[in-house]
Amino acid sequence: MTASGTAVATLTQADVYARQVTNSVIAEGYTLSGASVSDVDTNIVKINTYTGLIAPTNTTVGQYLDGSALSFQQYYGYQGGAIQYGASLTTGKITQTNPGVFFYFSGASGSIKVADGMATEKLSVTIDQTVSLKSGSPVTASFGAVQNNIQLYQVVDANRNGKYDLGESVNTVSSKSYSITAASGDITLNFTGVAGSFYVASIKYDTSAVVGATVGKNPATWPTVNYQFDTLFKATKIETYTGGVDLAPKQPAPMLLEGDQGTGARAVSDAQIKHVLAAAICWWEDYGISGEQLAQLKASTVEITDLGHDHQGWWLGASCGSLITIDDDAAHHGWSLGLGDVARNKVDLFSVLVHEMGHVLGKTDADMGSSIATGERTMPTLPVTPGEGGDDHAAPGVPDADHMLALVGSQVAAQQMHLHMS
Ligand SMILES: [Zn+2]
Image (cartoon, rainbow, N blue to C red):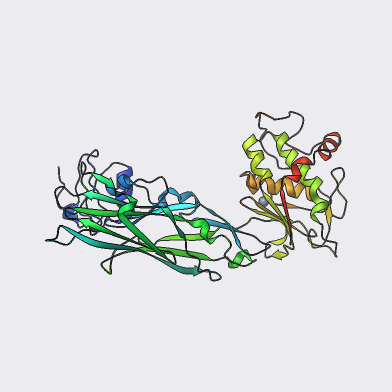
């Protein structure tokens, strides 16, 4: 059935997807006037978005063509719909991106096809990547295309209506049948098209291509960068994905000093903190983390640098993904490195490391607090995890003296962590 004259002025791509997700209405066409909106049975696939699509990596060409693919922004809505990056406060360089890959699909409009009256034609399609700065310090790094994950598909448009219809076949074009040229993030596919078909290209992009780019040591000026992908066919832009995708910083949440900075203290060395690292890992082992989480902790990196202060206060530690950074001298108070009593005028490194490791494991400041005073030992107050490997006398809470002594012996764990001095 067709609901004619329905008063829908313009349907955005988000509207189309939202309606499809709720199965309330299936709409044909990307820019729609009221008369062209169809209200049909939901098991009939009939969406053509007439647009390129930035999508999560598990998206298939079939989902792109029938309109059931989720956009990147929908899929990653929980992290603001952006690709997130973390950077080192020590080097000022991007250390990781999440997710590491995404897909760009183009060709649903049916525009990539042989000219009328010809049986075959040499065709060339370019995916043009544009990098533009939205805020913060400049970054111009492009995402790299994964060469062996560039794919061309042939849609046999049986009724020649320039759209994909349910039942029409979609063939993977052998990579031997086309050539790829890549230049500064742009990809061109050259191939011979046959009449009666149109073509779809998918490019897998590797976001980790920006790892190592300099964003500076001050998180307040870490940039947000927009990546736009346009499809050019016969030198004309035929498709784009409005808004592109943003690369945005994941801001480190600091553990702060309660009170004023100290009057001066020596910076710690990596050798001086190894036993505290080992004990902090053991604290989490006792808490009952899984073997996988334990491996994650041991694979994380600890950096020692001068974290200084910002409007929030003096930074003692921070973490970003699997990178933990601690201040070199505990805001000029000096670190208390003992596992027994905490030195009265110093800051307890054990507390700060347990806290930052908690972030690596996905705990938040809401679970663990976010500040500490000199002479204090504070452990996260987390619900008891009755997991395997859990040890009933230990976590949560401050371990007792005997237990701390036992932890001192286990230095093996610390040796497996990477320590970087600045
Ligand atoms: Zn924190």
